[in-house]
Length: 156
Length: 156
Image (cartoon, rainbow over all chains, first blue to last red; front, side, top):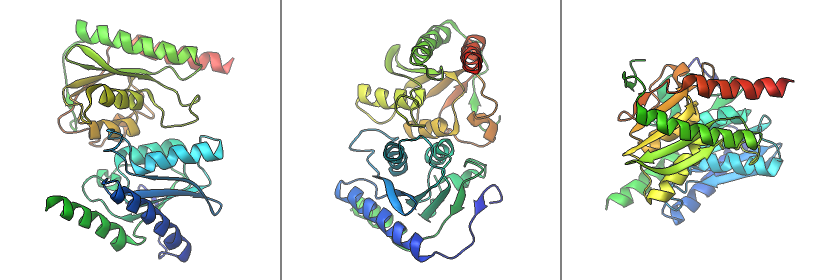
């Protein structure tokens, strides 16, 4: 993991607060029968972007929660870069979303649960912007159980 | 490069033909004062998607040529996956676009010129879908010189 600037602190109140809002986005995905991943982007204690997975509705495999959050944050802030922002996302981002975060130069990424198979960390390569700080494991159980329940229900 | 299924053939007439169409998309980017990268997606000798870089116009760093081509191809074909398709793109894709191509399961990617710094090959990791065949160097000089001229003009 030496590629990344990992934060080694325990989950703090602020991160838990915002991850709960990302989870609320993930719940919107469930209501839309989409894979329950949610994201919000925060700049100076203000929510500037949000999104949830909409790959089915848009018939578009690139319509991930993070991509929509990046786009909406750029619109809100009126600038392309998100240097002072934190992305909160319920599940570890994939390669595409990690690559998109590189272009935004986002200051910080906080994810909930690991995604061992398709998460970008599995690639063991330096995919984030060098200035992006990474933190994982915030409300990980809540984030993971939402996914597990969704797929269990699909299998019934 | 052992991560990828590289095609080792010389550029063939068909690939050159389609790369010229991707270059035509890149020229549209120049007209819009955008970084000149163009992409088209071909399925069974039919163009099903196209795009050119629009990061400035959309104020969105994710608005790469490939991303727009993926989305438009999915709309054209009415399915999320692009297994029988080839992406032609003038410049080696970045990590985000490589990651997006994974989700599309695209059959083949043909790029023009290398992008040594921000192209996905620089990451030396397996970012494409295992079934995606990769070919580079088709009209590479034309594709690269378009970029060089654009940035030279910007510096004046």
